[in-house]
Length: 235
Image (cartoon, rainbow, N blue to C red):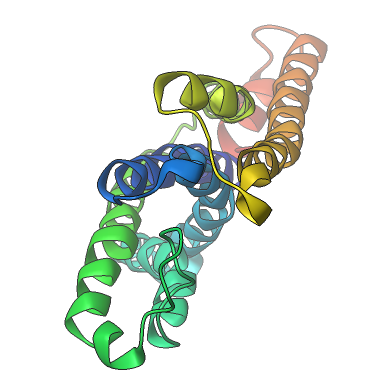
């Protein structure tokens, strides 16, 4: 279960970070925060990936034994898309282009909303769900390999490091943040947002790696009970 959540967070950072990059590349007249959507997308991916992981965990429950992958896929898809779906159906998002007035409801509903919903909410949710279903398929097989915990927790820590470095990397490869008024500090706010989310992600990943390493060193090699513990107690 914990490995599944770690994988969901790592997937979320990657997938929704890519959506943010798509936004930054396709929205015109966006000089004041050309890279900011990447930072916000990757940061948001931590929470959406966690929700997708929680949804995919329904495939590990007892009542899901007959079709665990199907249930995990539906759960992950709902978890990853529910927040964006609710936001889209509540009306147009805040203006994304500088000096652009708010979008009227009649322009948002329905074609514009459906394009946004399918491309920036459902596509990343499907990609994340497929990845987690593949992981669930490994989780339901026995024995459970201890190295899988090491891999997922390493992914989590590395994803956190990438999130920590993202503002510096993104700002160096896209146009410099410009603007005036409240928008001149948008890049700083986005960087602080990234760092505030990245630090606990890194801490959890490293803590779980150290915990796994400590538990492995305590158990004598070749101990049958230790092997049973490693295979039957996924972290």
